[in-house]
Image 1: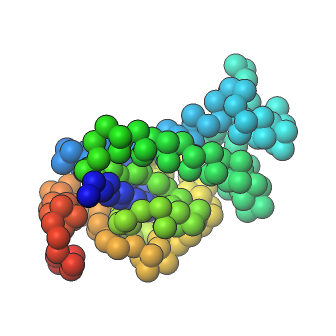
Image 2 (image 1 turned 120 degrees about the vertical axis):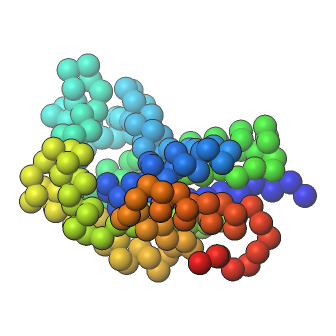
Length: 208
C-alpha cells in the first residue's frame, strides 16, 4: 500500500534547523519550508495580508505595500497577545498550503519521505500532522550567541526573542528524536544518518 512519511523538523530560533533540513535533502527527502509558506501567505493582497493590515495598520508595511516582517516581528515579540493574533492569521493558511503541497508530492511519488521545517510546530499544535518530530537542540548559551551573530542584535533583544518562544528544554518531551547541534557539523551529520537509517527501516527503536 502506498504510504508517505512526514517528518517535522523543529527547534528554537537559531538552533540550526535549516542546516539539518539541507542535510536531510541530500538523502532524497524533499523539503517543505514553513518559513517560505508563511511569507507566501502574507503576500500582497492575500487574505492574511489583509488581516494583518486591518489589525496592525499600515505601519508594518514597506513602501511597496509588502509586509515588513522585521517591523512586525519587533511588535509581536513584545506583546504575547499580538503574537497570538498574528499566528491566527498565518498558521491556518500555512497548514492549508502544506496539505496541498503534500498531496501534490504524494500524487507524483506515492512512496516517499517528505520533511517540513516548522519553527513553531509544537506551539502551533501541529504534532498530529507528522509521523516523526525531530527537534534540533542547542543549549541556551550557544543559541543566544548564534542569534546575536546571525541577526546582528544585542544580547537583551536576542534574549527577549528566545524568551517569547517555548523553552527548548520543554520541547524535548514532544520530540521523537533530538539532534544535538551543539558540536561539529560532522557530529550532527552522524546523528542525521542514524535518524535516516531508522526512518527508512522497519525498526521500532531509534538507534542511540
